[in-house]
Amino acid sequence: MIVLFCDDQKSVHTFLEKSINWKALNVTSIFHAHNGTQCLELLNSKHPDLLLLDIRMPQMTGIDILKEMSCLNLNTTTIILSAYSDFNYAKEALKLGAFDYELKPIDSDRLTQILTRALKAQTNAYMTCLYKMLSGHSFASHLSLDLLDRLGIRQFLGILCVFPETAAPDIILQFREYLQEYYKYIIPLNDSELFILYPVSGNDYQQTIRSVQEQHKELCQFMEGTGLKFSVSLIGKDISFLNEALAQCRKALRDEFYSSTDFFVYHDHPLSDDLQPLLLQYRLRIYSCLTNANGRNQIPGILDKMFELFTQNRIDFDALTDICFNILYYNISVILNQDSEIEFHLHSDMKNCKSLSELRTLMEDTLMQRFFNAVSDIAEKTPIQNVHSYLEQNFTENISLENLSRKFFISKYALCRGFRQEYQEGLWDFLKRLRMEHARSLLTTTNLKIYEVAEQCGFTDANYFSSTYRKYYGHTPFQEKKNI
Image (cartoon, rainbow, N blue to C red; front, side, top):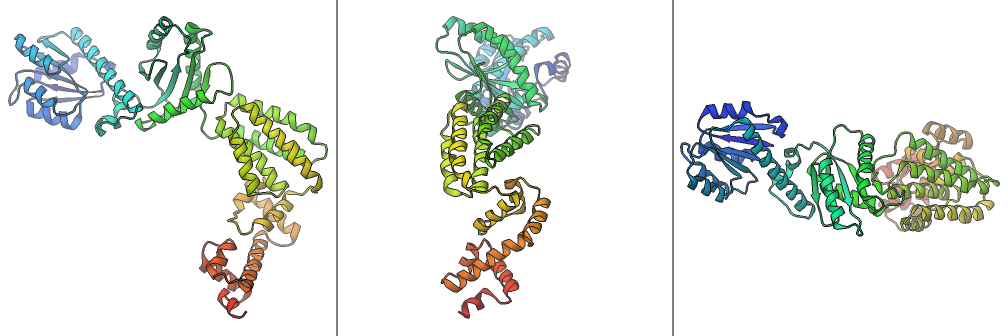
């Protein structure tokens, strides 16, 4: 919060700054004005949250400043501190929007109580602004950009609390009051939803989740058996994440496919370092089963353990379907050498799944029916042989060593060395030969332009294609067409 003192007496400034514990009130900056002109300049440039204002000052009175403030579209709470007890001054100040009118001298305890109420009212006003932002309203840039910072929130976790429709109104009221004991920043979205900004320090997401879960257990004792639901977002650091946090929480509640604990966690971050190798092991184990005549009976057990891993780590459902798709499509493209059409239909089927059980059933049916009906006629190949077959069918695509290594689960060094040992030809020499032979065929049998031939042979640059062709055959593509 930002505070502005406006008084023509320096002793008042000193008293206000030294006698109040501003840090405890979440005040981060204090500015000083000694006359009305300075006050208006600081109001326009600093946009203070709280103004402590004198009535009688040089150039402009406090009443004049209040009148000017009504035209500035500020979100500033004003407390009048004046030595004048004239009721007309107080009446006019309160009519112009002042929060309070207090007489000097005032002791620090009394002033602290007033400041606490004023800053609480200011916080409530900001929470109303946050609600309006979540509802699609826009505000002045100076307010919207640093609103969380003014509330003292450096980074936050979004928590969505949804009351069950069957809960009695008195229970909900009691629960709301209890929530206010736990959480300072609560935004009521409607009769059944509360959105909570939970300030966090550090970046340990899992530790923060555990802390919220512990609070959740105690809170739910008030509504045991009524179906109260909580969901949480990832950690956000600025106002731009506010709407995203709410969307993540609602998505977690919509995708409540992991447990019946009424606490749903949204995960949309990269898989942990510990999880990646485990998923790779499952992928390779499924590959081994599919290329083994006795592997059919092992598939259900492997899927059971894999989905147990998914549940324990609460992976986001969209990310989970992508993992399952990659496992299946890897085997389709590598073992069966089938590509785009299969990919489209399989991806579509997976995205239509709404639960873990549907997804697991789809995986098992696809593995059992598609593979074991087709793989029986296909001899088992080594990874290097699979790479060779893949290049023969996809040499016109954009191919990189890194993608091949990731696709066939073999290191780049082992891939290059193994390919040369298996075929007595380097991998890139083989790929170039396929492309050049295809290019010569197109140049001599079609009317395609040279840049069109380049595109159909996997080259994005026609000049580079011409240079490569000339080095390979000793003449340019243009000469090849001309000599037909």
